[in-house]
Structures are given as structure tokens and as C-alpha cells.
Image 1 (cartoon, rainbow, N blue to C red):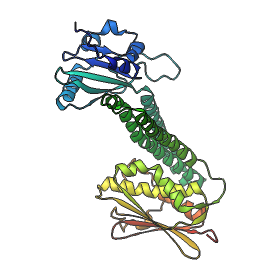
Image 2 (image 1 turned 90 degrees about the vertical axis):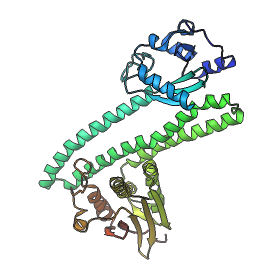
Image 3 (image 1 turned 135 degrees about the vertical axis):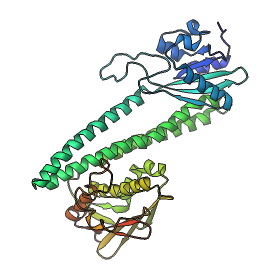
Image 4 (image 1 turned 45 degrees about the vertical axis):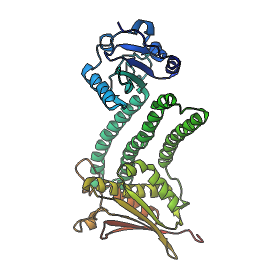
Length: 401
């Protein structure tokens, strides 16, 4: 049985970390077991130090973990051991509470080289139960939403054929489609700051060992993490406000509202390397803010879908604002290649879509036309340019704007 390695003052630091920390020797015997693990597993360090991790926990995927450890030692860099849903490295049962999705703690593990010569590595175990639960509930919600949407589409098709409350039903379906897109956007919008938080937490110990941690470092570390947390909180507020129904027309700054919508899908835009250009000065109009937001969001998402489908190089979207004596005009131009002339006259028809089965409902542009022309007394039109499709929205400006 291996002897416990004395890590001096590092022991105290590792014992205060709010994550599981295991140190293994070259034979994968446990050299250190911090207090967080002792508390969670009810196994005191004195009873587990020297035990081989695979003999103590036979459910671990030995081949996979060994390969990850060898990679970390060979490259002298952290190796990430992502554990599948409803799985774990160390079985830590969770307390029985209402609506608990998992019986055991969900985990992710980072393997960090500790002593290359002695082949000693440090395993950082992170509790991802809350995140996994949120993702699982999100998946269930999306599945239920899609099931409901499919059922609703069948009902809508029947009702439209009978011309019974067509506009009301189409609006309802449009809202559900946008809601599905928004839920997906929330997941995408949160993924990057969550990863950033994980990295910040993960390397705090390394920076301390390198002598980089002092009071100024901790303050800066806290500020950066709180900025990420506040960003995630503000994201939820933005999405909640997006779905508040408009009860009356109000005057609003059209460029600010458009910018807010771009911010909602910013991470999708960034991940696809899409460049957004704002051109011209803003103006104010009177209308339904959320309705206008839905139109802009639909047009932006259509461009993003084209970029993804056609793998457009250097994708970009130009959003221009200009005005005349009576009208304020917003133009959205992308470089996605444009719309086939044979279908140009049909794109605003209900249920007409060029997307694959299951990827489009064919009501986005139809609802956009209804919102702009029927509810905001404006005009929406489209044409092709050398680069791609250009949508032009004309609205009545606020007087003296």
C-alpha cells in the first residue's frame, strides 16, 4: 500500500477547495483525498490513502481514465475527462428530494500533471449536477414544445383551410416557434460564460502555486466572475421581457431595439464568425416593440441559417438605417447568395418554406409581413443584390424626430 505523500502547506489549501481533489501516484494509488470528498462520500482520507483508485471504485472506466492520465503527463497539460450524463467518476449518492433527476452526483473531471517524473497527477472533480439537471429539463422542455408544436401545426392547417380564426392561430404558432428558438438561444448564450467560469475556477489553484495570487488578483478574479454571472442574469431578463405581450403602441428608438435583438443571439453570431455592420443614424417610430423584435429576429435567424447551410465564407449582415420626410427605413442585407427568382413572389406566403422537412414552418416571413404591414402600417419588401437578399422595412417616423 502506497504511503501518503506530504504536500506541506498545499494540504490546507486543497482541503479548502469546494471541489473534489484526488492525487494519484504512478500506479494510480491514492496519495491525497481532500475534505470535500471525505464529506461527500463519507470516506475519511485515512481509510482511502494508499488504495488503488480502480480497486476502490471498480465502476470507473479504467481504460479511458488511464488514457487521459497518460495524455496529461505526456503533454504536460491538463486533460479533461468529460463524464456522460447519469454517470460519474466517484459514486456520490444525492439526498432524496422532490423532482431530483439524478440519484448520484453528476461530475466532470480535470486531470492536471503534478509531478511529471514521478507520474503523479491531480484529479479535480466538479459537481455538475445543477447544470446537468438544467440541461435535461431544457431538453425535456424542447421535446415537449416540439411535440406540442407538431400537434398544433396539424390543428392550424385544418383551421386555416376552414378560414376560422386564421390570424389568431398563426400568431400563436409563430410565438411558439420563436419560443423554441429562444430556448435554444438561452442554452447557447449561457454555454460560453459557463465554460469561462469553469476555466476561471479550474486554474485558480495553478495560479496560486505559481505565486500569482494576491489580494489584487482575487479582486480582479471576483470582478470577472461576477461580470459573467451578471451577464447570464441579464440574459434571462432580456428573454423574459421579449415575451411580454405588447398591449399598446409606443414610440421607440429603432436602432436600440435592433441592437438588443442582436445581443440576444450574439453568441450564435459569434460562434458562426458572422460580422454585423450597423450603418446610418437611428430614428423613432410608433408601434409594437416586441412585434418589431420578432421581425428583426426572424430576418437575422434566416440569414444565419443560410450561412450555416451553405458554409458561406466571411459571412456578414449589414443593417442600415436611413429616413426621408415621412418614413424611416431599415435594411437588412446579407451575403448569403440571395433568393431564387422563381420563388421570390412566394416567400411571404403562409407555410411556404425552402428549408428541409422539420426545420421550418413557413410562417416566419408571413408573420413578419403581418406585423409590419397590418399592425404597424408599414411596408416590408425584398430583392436580390450581387451579394445576397436585402429586406427593406418602411415605417412611419415619429414627427419632430
